[in-house]
Length: 116
Image (tube, rainbow, N blue to C red; front, side, top):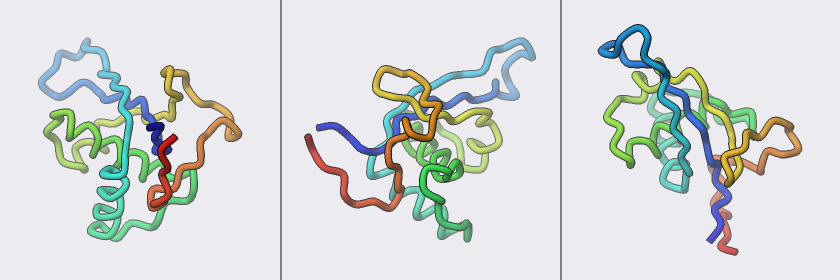
């Protein structure tokens, strides 16, 4: 099954406990419906506006946080946003999606993900 939810490359700043010369941490992660739901819960709890199509960088960041939590990252959404220095859409091969025409349709509230 091919997911229609975004695949993201997240760059996190070194933690306060790391040395000043530590490199940022880069994580590639596939989001799914659970992350879209997490975005909706966080958005409502924090009284944030809805995502604006593919320009919803806040929505993508929250979805990245949710997906990273499933992989064992133990930080709050506020800590994640504070340490997140990059959140980019990538394709299945990890290539950065640069042009708007290359960005897959992303609607964090879209229930219509279909299997191939």
